[in-house]
Amino acid sequence: MSTQIIFQGFVVLHLIGFLLFAGTSVADFVGFRQFWKQYDVDKSKAATVMQAISVFPVLMRVGIGLIILSGIGIMYMTHGVFGEQLWFRVKFALVIVIILNTFLFGQRQKKQLKKSFETSAGTVQKIRGNIRLFHTIQLLFVFIIILLSVYKFN
Image (cartoon, rainbow, N blue to C red; front, side, top):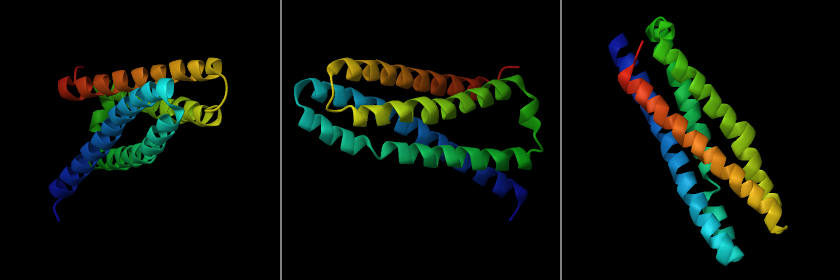
């Protein structure tokens, strides 16, 4: 197998990982919008929506894993040539922020929501705002990463 085929394989896996992560992030955003609509009307329907979207974090982790592993492969194959470029450094920092945002902020808010599902509306409203902020940050950074990947400024 030639190194070009291996490199292209890493690029394909990288794109699949990114699409899996980004697509699941959009689906999570849409799913939570539906959850909040149902929460305001019928909490039992909201619980069903929550159950349906509960698989998204697993898919996000798989996407992040593919991104990291294939990114390491790409950097190895190119001898780190992208690491010297400004657009890549900014993109890499954003990926780190997205990963931290997902695991440190987003997952914590979702766990709190599950715990306080039956409690007062004040607590749930704060969590609602935090989850909205989480999704806004995620989707904005995904969009910026796409722009950086396409335009590759220096």
